[in-house]
Length: 81
Image 1: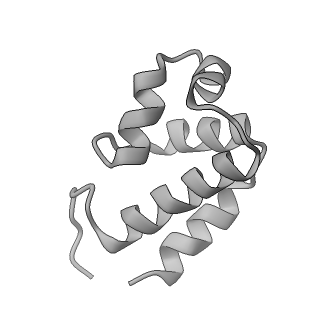
Image 2 (image 1 turned 90 degrees about the horizontal axis):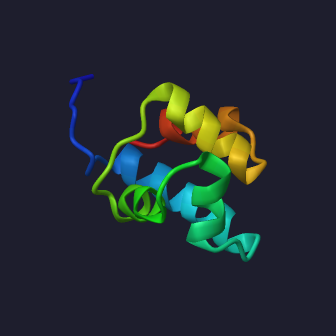
Image 3 (image 1 turned 30 degrees about the vertical axis):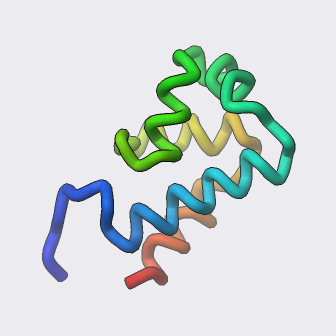
C-alpha cells in the first residue's frame, strides 16, 4: 500500500460521505455541528467538500459531536480501496 496525503483518495471520499450522511440523517445544520465543535461553520463545510482533512483527534471529536462511533468510520476506511 502506498501512503498518500491526498484528500481525494477513495477512502477519504467514502469517509466524508459517511460523515455527511450522518449529519444529514439527523437533519443537523452545518452551523449546529460547527457550534458543537466550537469551530466556524466553514470548517464543517470545508471538511464535507473535501477541502480540509481531519486529523485523528479531530475525526474522533467530529464523530462525538455527531453521536456516531468513530470505529465504524475507521472500518469503512479499512474496507474501501
